[in-house]
Length: 232
Image (cartoon, rainbow, N blue to C red):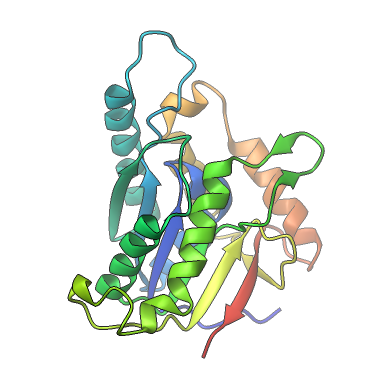
C-alpha cells in the first residue's frame, strides 16, 4: 500500500496526555523523522487522571504535563500546547472551537490529526471517554469550514488557514493504514513516559499486538489505521 506524502506541518488535537501515545504516536514519530513539524494541542491536562485519594487537580495537571512533554521529546514533536480545560468535563463548545481555530491559524498545518467523535464503543470492553469525543468534534468543527473563513472569529487577529487533509485515528471506517514498523519502539517508549497512568505495566506487548492486528488487514507487520479526508 502506497502511503501519502508526509505533510510538512501537522497539528494534532487530543483530549488528554497519553491519548496520542495509545493511538497514533507511531505515525507522528515517523512523520517527525521525515521532517514534518508537529504541534500537539491537548484540550485538558489530564488533571482528573488518578484514583488515588488525596491528590489535587493542580498536582495531577503538573505531573501529567511533564509526562507529556517527555513523551513529545521521544516522538520528536515540535511543541505541546495545553488548553487546560477541566479533565472529565470537556464539551465541544464554541469557546473550545475558537481556541482550536486560533491554534490552526497560528501553526498553519497542512494536516490535522484527531480522534473519531462518532466512536462510543471499541470492542466489547471499552466505552470511549466523552472527552475524546468532545475534543474530536471540536477539532473537526474548527477545521471545516471555520479556520479558513475570515469572518469567523476575526478578533483572533490571525489570517485564515485551510487545512488540506485530516487524519482521524481510531476511526470507525478507516481507509488508510500507515506502516509503523520503524517507529513502534518509539511509540512504546513514549507511552512509558506516562508513569502516573501506567505504573509498572509494560505497554510493549499490548501496543505491538494492536499494531499487528491493524497491520494484518493490509499485509503489514505493524500499522496504525486512519480515516484520511482530503479537503483540497
